Image 1 (cartoon, rainbow, N blue to C red):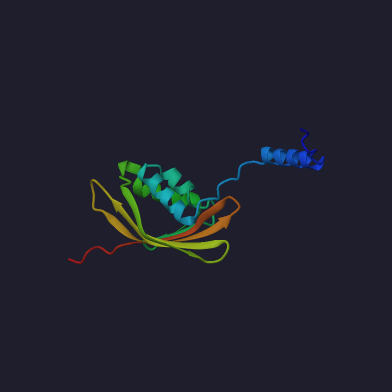
Image 2: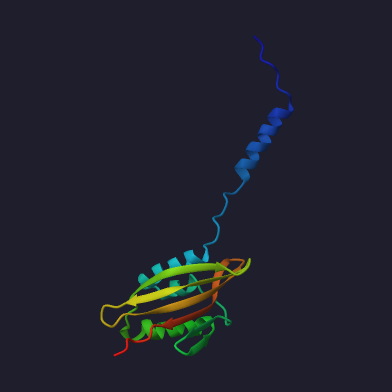
Length: 158
């Protein structure tokens, strides 16, 4: 019994298809979303890694702004220094950070807003918390925080 002869184009097409599959690189995962970045920042904070908290979310730029407690801090390093003074230096306790009531809003193709609540639970001092708004901008390397406005809850009335 004689098998039918395949047209010479079929083996060539198969070889081309196999070569294309073998040479194509696996697809890279998409960059984290703003909400995923906030979750990673929470994990970094709770691991006691302030540098990862900053590097994982904030845009490393002199134009980064941080508003809190009536102060306006500009620049990545000054924002990092502010966090370090408040939560690391002199044996300060970083506490356990919890973000909640998170909402993400797209403001266009390259901007997003994340808002929610932050709470810090401490072992040796009173807990603190408040509200925050983060402005994200999409860069070639992914989403980064370009502005953070955080407020603390008012102390309870006596």
